[in-house]
Each structure stands twice: as C-alpha cells, then as structure tokens.
Amino acid sequence: MDRSVEELLKDSPVIQSPMAACTDLPFRLIARERGLAFSFLEMVSAQALVRDNEKTRRLLQSTPQDRPLGAQLLGCDPAIMAEAARIIEDMGFDWLDLNLGCPVRKVTANGEGAALLKEPDKAAAVFRAVKGAVKRIPVTVKTRKGFEDESGDEAVAVAKRAEAEGLSAVTIHGRTQKQGYTGRSDYSAIGKVKAAVKIPVIGNGDVVSAQDALRLKQESGCDGVMIGRGGLGNPWIYRTLEGVMRGEETPAYVPTVLERRETLLKHLEYEVQYCGERQAALNMRRITVWYTAGLPNNKPLRAAVCRTMDCGEIRRLIEDFFAALPETVPPPQAPLLLGE
Ligand SMILES: Cc1cc2nc3c(=O)[nH]c(=O)nc-3n(C[C@H](O)[C@H](O)[C@H](O)COP(=O)(O)O)c2cc1C
Image 1 (tube, helix red, strand yellow):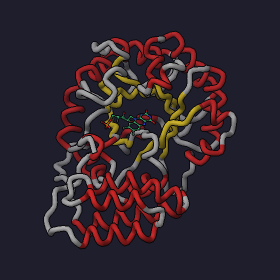
Image 2 (cartoon, helix red, strand yellow; image 1 turned 90 degrees about the vertical axis):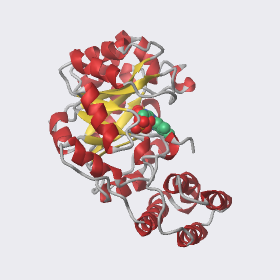
Image 3 (tube, protein in one colour; image 1 turned 120 degrees about the vertical axis):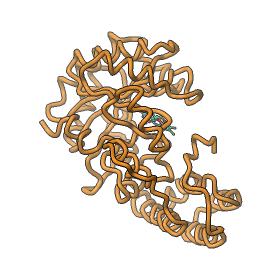
Image 4 (cartoon, protein in one colour; image 1 turned 60 degrees about the vertical axis):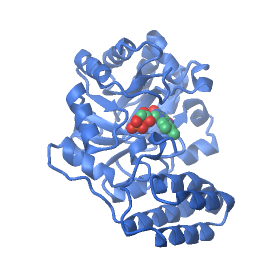
C-alpha cells in the first residue's frame, strides 16, 4: 500500500479539488511552487481512458515535481471503471477519486456523476469493482450533499456504502445537484456525514479565506478541507489555509503587485511549455480573468487577450496592464465566486 489517506491528510490538510479545464499541469506547478502540497487533476471519463483517447491521456500529463497527485474518474459502469482504475494506478498516481458530484445535465442523464447519489446500489457496485481492481493506492469518493434532497441523507447513504466497500475517505461538497453552484455550501450537512462514518471526511465548498476554512472545520468536524474556485488566480492561499488548519496563527499572505505580475507571466510560460502556443493562448483567456479579478481596468486587458493567438502579445499586454496599476490594489479574489 502506498501512503494512506490519513498520512496524506496529516501532511496536507488542504487539498486542491479537481476542476475541469482549470487544474491542469501549469496551474498545479504554479500552485505547488507557492505552497500547495496535494492536488487533484480534473476528472477524466473512464470510457475515454479505457479507449486510450489521446485528449484524455493529455489531461493526465504530470511531472515528478507534481506530487502527491490524485486522479478522478467519471463513470457508472463497474467493469469499465475497474479497468480505468487499473490504468490510473499503473500510471503512478497517489490517490484515485470517484466522481459522484458532477451536476452537468449531459453527465447525469447518462447515470454518471451526481446521478449515482440517487442509486446507492449502483454506486456501491462501482465502489466494489474499483476497490477490487486497485491494489496500492487509496480509493475515495467525492459527492454532493444530495441530488435534490436538502437534508444531507443521500450523502450519508453514499458515504456509508463507500465505507462498507472499503473506500478510504469521502469528500462532500455541501450543495445539491439541483443547486449547481448557487446558494451556499451547507457545512452542517457535511457534519452529518462526518458523524455517520469512521473514514475521514473532507469538507468542500466556498472556502476562499482562512476564516472559511476554520468555519468549515469547526461546523462539520471534517478531517481535511478541499478548495476549488478559491485557488484560481490565488496560488498563495494554500499556505495560509494550511497554517490555520494546523492551528497556527497565520496571517493571510498578500502578494505584492509585482509578485502577481510575475506569477501570471510564469503561468503563461508554463502554459506555452506544456500545452503549446495555440492552446496556451486559448487557456490564457480564462487564466487572465482569474488573476485580474477585482483589479481596476481589467476589462480592456481581458478583451485584448481574447482577440489574439500570439503568446508574445499576451505577455506584452499583461506587462502593460500591471505597469499601469496603482500601488495599492485589492487582494486576490475568487473570480468564479464573483460571477466573473
Ligand atoms: C469550472 C469547474 C470545474 C469543476 N470540475 C470538477 C471536476 O472535474 N471534478 C469534481 O469532482 N468537481 C469539479 N468541480 C467542483 C469543484 O471541485 C468543487 O467541488 C466546487 O467548485 C465547490 O468548491 P469551491 O466552492 O471551493 O469551488 C468543478 C467546479 C468548477 C467551478
């Protein structure tokens, strides 16, 4: 057995969540260089992985510095999930998570993602098949508090089935599928799951500050915190959160304007290096939005980045934008939580 969930959580009580089209290799390298220890890469379809789809393989690219690293599978067919799980383990990932939380209609219509919350027997069959296929690494599940039901009982049922099938931990995002990303993550529902199982419970949803992480830990009793949108454009947040989760008095780290400029430029450099010039130019459209959330006069920069496929020009646009900023600006903000 590789490192257990308990050991990984002890070293790293703050985990970057899997986020489609966000948590790619450049994102993770930038985050790790500034304090992130444990990260997930985005969900991949078990079907596509088993078919050896080239795009899916590319989503799984990593480097030796990009460790420890978890992969996440999406699917509902036990045999295919088991085969995909074996591939993930053979590729050397440290942790395998099963996605039972994706709320997207196209996914749930296939019986995948959050749809499995309504089918605990089917979910248990997937857990059993995957657990039987994986020999060394921990297998966990990430889900929501319910499909439509607000009580948290559906998450409790799935967590109990996960525990019974030998899974190592559960992560709960305290929203229902129906809510999507509206409303607030319900930390008491996460606490309900924590009270119902003995395996570690990782809490998730709306953590963008040390206070949020503390409140999530105190209200739910969770064993670790998973952060999603709060890490976009704010790779300094992990160190602050790690500190508070260990009970230290860690003042929030506020990067200087120069650091923010250098970090965005480094992110661009990694994008070009690992994704190629064309894909990098496309990815920079959203990455620029993350790093400039809440900064004055960000709209012309964002519009100009969207008009070019030339990464040299994107670099110049970023340099000019930061050169024109006033000395004091608001600290990094969570762009997708601002609705940007
Ligand atoms: C753009 C985007 C992509 C996401 N992709 C995934 C994914 O691939 N797998 C997953 O389990 N959750 C995914 N999520 C959900 C997040 O991991 C997380 O559970 C959710 O955003 C709540 O946490 P937060 O408030 O810290 O962002 C995604 C969320 C967003 C906004």
